[in-house]
Structures are given as C-alpha cells and as structure tokens.
Length: 293
Image (tube, rainbow, N blue to C red; front, side, top):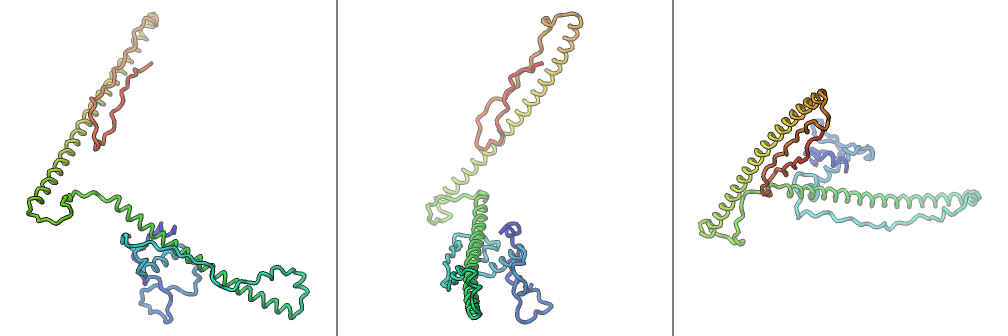
C-alpha cells in the first residue's frame, strides 16, 4: 500500500493487457503484450511490481476498475463488505504422536516404526492442508482490506474535491421547485432581484477594497512619520550627548546638565470598524515608552 500511495497508477498500469500470464503458445515478436513468466516465484516480485499487477487485476474487473481509474467515487459505489471466513472442516492431525516419549520410539520394532512413520506422514499432510487453508483465509482478508483502503482513498479524494470546489457566481432563483416561463413576470422579478443583490454585493466589495487601500496608504504615511520622528530624536540625543560632554569638560556638575530630549509618541490612525473581508491586521500598538540612555 505504501508503494501504491507514493506511485499512483498510470494509464499503462490500469490497462488489462499490461500484465498477463504466459499462454500455452509462444507469442509473436510483434506482440506488445507484456508476458509474465509463470516459473518466477511471486514472492520475489518487488513492491512496485506487485502494485502494478494488483492495479491491472482491479482494472480488469467491472466492480473495481473505478478504484484505480480517474473517475470519482459516488454514493452508488459501495465499500466492499468484509469477508468473514471460519476454519474449514478438515481432518485435524493426531497430536497424540507428540506425547510419545523418545525412549518408546527407540524401542519400536521395524514394522511398528513403519506404521508410526505412515501415521506421521498422514498427520503432516493434514497439517499442510490446515496451514494452506489458513493462509488462504489470511490472504483473502488482506485482499479485502486493500480494496477497502482503496475505496476509502477514493472517498477522501471525492470529499476533498467537493470541499475545495470554488463557489459559483450563478444564482439559483427561489421558484419553489416549480417550472416557470422565462417571460413570466414572477420569473423576471426574481431575476431582477438576484441581479440587484449581486450588484449590491459587488459595490460593497469594491467599497471595502477602497477603504482597505485608504487605510493602507494612511498606515504607510504614519510609518514614514514615525521613522522621521525616530531619526530626529536620534539626532537630538547625539547633540545632547555632545553638549553634555562639553559642559562636563567645562566643569559643570552632572546635576546641572540639561535633560535628555524626550521622543514624541508614535502617531496612530483613527480606529475604523473592521469588516469580515478586511485582510489587514490590527494597527501597530503605540510605543509610549521614551528611549533611555
């Protein structure tokens, strides 16, 4: 499943003729069909090879082709029901042979050993049948889980496409579900109301956009003023420091030095009511604190 998620099936993979078993007769050199050698152990296949074979097998069925195709899943497509299988009615092995001690086996005669070996062989055959039946049940359950997982993936894709679908600008007139003539006055009035509502929404949207643009320009202007205030304050502080150094050199006491120039408050724009479509964030907070030394 990890290989399937990272490498979605292509049109070549979903082709039913892509992966087929070798036929009895030899294929012609001009055949484009890929032949799978039946002598190769399927356990040696790579995950991507198994994924392609599974995709081709699903694409060849009428009930599973939509799972690997581009079509979206609908409510008509039902998720496969789980396959619940119990253990088959097979002859169980004789577990009493395990209770026979080794000393007792060593004391058996030649004929008794032959009978004992035949019984062990029969028990091994029964055990083999039990294991094969169990492996078949597990394989069937795993196949069902894989198909169910593919179905869930298709459902997720359909839900994502529905959730991200863009809203259309077309209006659905409230006609109570009944048919109407296009020239009927009731239909004309409903169409005019829908048109007026659409125009009002467009006008309100344009107005909000204009207000946001004005607010943006005002914010940029205030920011420039704030930068100018900080620049002037830095110059005033530098001049104050030079003056203090000169006064200290002339013997003036520190307590008699002039005070450090204070920085003006940050200018703020008047608050305006925010709307749902406003994309601008809140205005910057005021910087009320003056700069220290």
